[in-house]
Length: 342
Picture 1 (cartoon, rainbow, N blue to C red):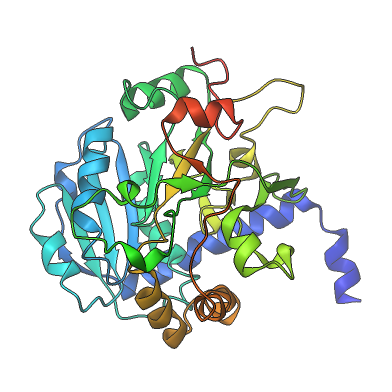
Picture 2 (picture 1 turned 60 degrees about the horizontal axis):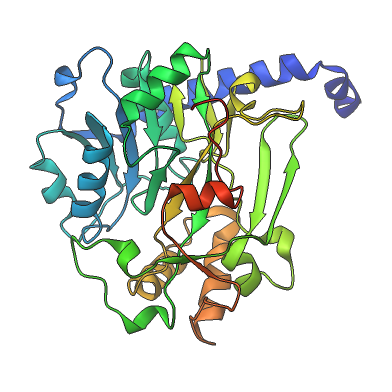
């Protein structure tokens, strides 16, 4: 009987209740975050902000910060989930970084999204906010000549409050372990290849977001069950409002209309890609650590698949792989779109 009554509740009201629950949960989980250095008073009106959760990513941080500073991020808000590799000390000394630390469970915080939702609520409201992992690098039409401020200004003028980006897994030609990644280096000088096709797309009718799967992780690690492969759809760039909340990573948000980043009438809306630098020489060590911690989705099923694949070799390159050149190449392949942003 309870299930029957629940099914009669309009979806709109169910989504509203879920959104309110997620916001309340984020407010409650804020107690787990201990400020290390808080420079948020320096955030100016119109600043573009980046929100990041990390654990043991010291080697990636110099290039990550440099990349996004050049792109136009004005301030970074990091949650350090009990790193022991010097990540916290490095970030503490960066003048455009505010840093929080927590030892709390990544899994029990909805894989860090409770922490991020709180920081977005507290500091992101009214700002364009980019939520990414340390191995994700946003690329979009004209990114080589137009900074993020140009993109967000155009989005504002177009009445859009969010910008999508498909996660594009990058990998080297040859075994991942063959070329050691050195701190501060450009990861895409090593992992410069990607799958130009091999993707499936569907629509989530309840949340309204697109669901994308495929690429090298699906064909190599989830070949027997492609639907168990990781989701590649992301909505990382949002003009934040205190009523918003991420539901599942950055795959989808509430309210529902923030997820409607596509055109169903035959046209195209502007979109980008997140170049994903997961597959470097550090991958085996990181996978083993995360498998031991069991802090990821579905009892770390994804990392179990990686671990099994690593025993058989880690060469993701195939005859159909393409070497990355620039955003124009991605547009030609239909992986990003300018839409009506000339």
